[in-house]
Image 1: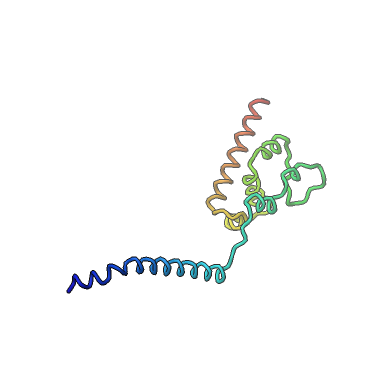
Image 2: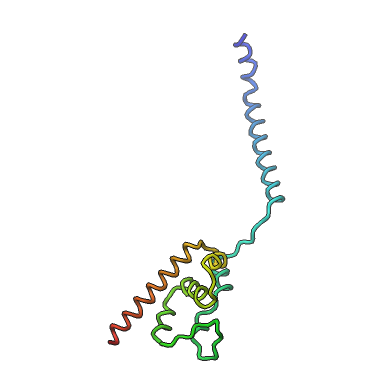
Length: 141
């Protein structure tokens, strides 16, 4: 009797396979449509566009116009030159830490990075400034 059952279904295997594929495709499309209509879409902006809006132009730090309390006022030209050689992200982290006196957590949220990255950028920037300023002192002295 088991042989008879197998022979009865062997002709329907092709139909079963087609139905299974149709059902899978229908479910996938239904799920996709549901997710498209019921999930919030986040606005995606390029990283460069997001940074350019939140980070001021570094040239603004070095103009001889009247400075506000939120701008760096470098006493030495060597320090200004060394600061200008830092990457944009390192400059911004230093500005937010020392000028605007924000915490690492606030900076991390503002720049969409982790607090550990804030510490890394800070230490990398300070090391680079230290190296550039000591090199300049060796050449002058």
